[in-house]
Length: 258
Ligand code: V07
Image 1: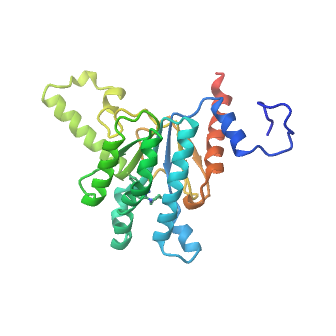
Image 2 (image 1 turned 30 degrees about the vertical axis):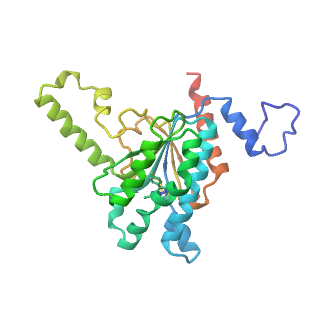
Image 3 (image 1 turned 90 degrees about the vertical axis):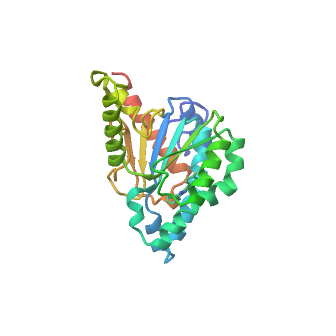
């Protein structure tokens, strides 16, 4: 690729990751990136390992990508960690997954605090085990005043239920006279969703070759750019993330003029 920043650099030489990062930062960086982190089970199967080994490896990738997103100046990173459908998996797998937030935060929370990252969550808290919720609430509390990257975990999240709950709340507020039905527009309705206060994602990444949304942020993704890759989430690295952002910026340039 042509190196626009440094004309002295050989143009046949591949750009280093740090060059690509500087290049990205000199352009418009997607403010909100959402990721469907798929392919952990398949990664494990390929290695004859139990599925949970894939989930554990996937958790390490979350750290790497969080650091990089923060470095790039991304404002919000939403990660789909557990869907409402995932309860149907074997109990031992669900139990393992529900321990990952504690493990992740047990070692990574000090760095998140240090790096000015704010931890948030969307999804239904009620069904989560107490130990899981406790760890997440501690992280949210100790990072609530941070002003850097917002690291938003979607946990026990499903978009259709989110929309139905929002409709019910809108109806309640209309019945109670708190909301004028004529004032219901896109912005008002958005404020009833779990993502109230977040801007819509600019870029959605889904790993592992599946080309579908799987009930993730259906309303919020209406105008989002999609990046699908065959790479399995545990194999997803800094280069892959940088590539997704480069592709996003390329698309912005192409229709940016009109
Ligand atoms: C989970 C690892 C990533 C791949 C996808 C499935 C498995 C990090 C968290 C997490 C959640 C909340 C929080 C801090 C960390 C997590 C689950 C699964 C359920 F505050 N990774 N990860 N939670 N996986």
